[in-house]
Image (cartoon, rainbow, N blue to C red; front, side):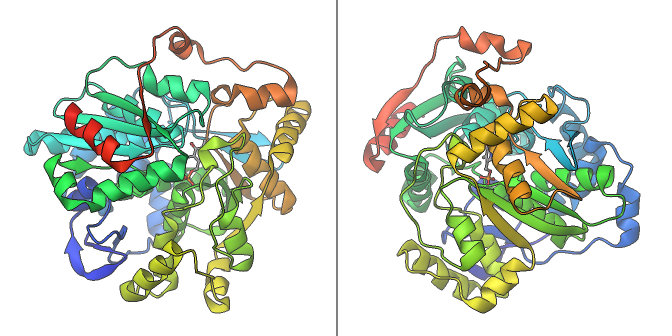
Length: 457
Ligand SMILES: *Cc1c(COP(=O)(O)O)cnc(C)c1O
């Protein structure tokens, strides 16, 4: 499959390029040049596969130049061997709603599903190309832990994680900072997630720096993550779809997870609505409901993994909306950078064919955790509560799957506020609370952060 950048569709890239680079040199995001839609009989052939076999079938067409299908299958099998449920994910009922539990991996959030695979992809790549890679990643809390777990101790690579200092939950932080492997580096940036993301983007755009350290990235803009995530949309559809189109409600920050659903729909999966559920950092809700894509200041909430105002993957959707015109996309992106972009009516109509949105504030989120606990005697994490609440507000509970993106024990404060109860770590992760933490606090200053990295590699 050939890939292009959303800001220049004249130049072709292979999957290997796309995977290792993460972001295109022109600042654009990689997307497939074209996508073949699956036919009804293709879907029929997929419907009774195990999660791992399904993953191989969905992912292989996107990465055929990278490895053989047999290699991919065995790599998937290894990557998911440390999940706490056999089929990687689990589906449960919440009244009429279905909940797709994506948090059964080693660091308790959906990020593990793509990241464990990506860790294996790096290892595979480095068997052929021995040049040491430095992976730099910004995190709003969960990506960093997932990346570190997937990459710690692997030879020929380092992983540097930038998280916003004091703006993530203690459990989120501990899952990143307790590791002793010498290839793991944690930087707590005195800023918010968007600052961390901007620092990583500017390091990528600094060709001299990124070449010097052989930089690579695993943020949610990495195409490999998107394809790994679209697998669970297929899996959920085959388990609960009953040949009816399904809607998916997705707690959203960077627009990566829900874009994976959009990709599944483009591949031919019968998806009705994709519901973007946000917290009060609601740029995507304002955009999708009324075309307002102006950035406001990021506010801290009890759903920190969604405290984001720059939804990077939205560029991939804009490229589609702009009829795959990369010049126009580039223009729009520069308007967005200057905070001077409003989505016009015809573009908005196109977006609304596939997406609707809703928002929950912090009080509503806590209330939702409480109501669900009273009604169904289960504890959901605050991000999942935003998803459940959005589906309920929209009255879309039938034929709807909410993505449950994290284990509740990662966000004990919100759970405590809702039901006055502590939510414990699973037994296999209890040791996390005992270990010593290691991280470096640095100012939101590109030069100091680059110096720290250069001196560590
Ligand atoms: C990352 C994350 C999200 C947001 O996912 P995006 O792909 O950034 O939209 C939601 N919930 C949790 C728990 C997360 O870790």
